[in-house]
Length: 47
Image 1 (cartoon, rainbow, N blue to C red):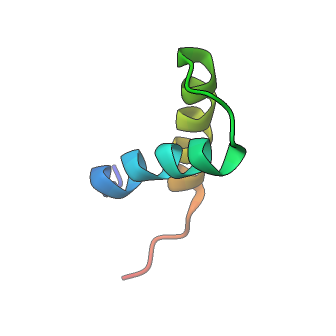
Image 2 (image 1 turned 30 degrees about the vertical axis):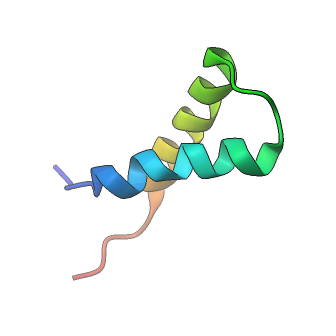
């Protein structure tokens, strides 16, 4: 199982939300959260 940087993974959705210029809503944040976790899972692991 890969180890994730949780701090970085949780900062990313907030950054995406601010970049989208949309008001905060739970569904919008959830979509950005899913996008951030998908990116975190698919990044290549470097030794």
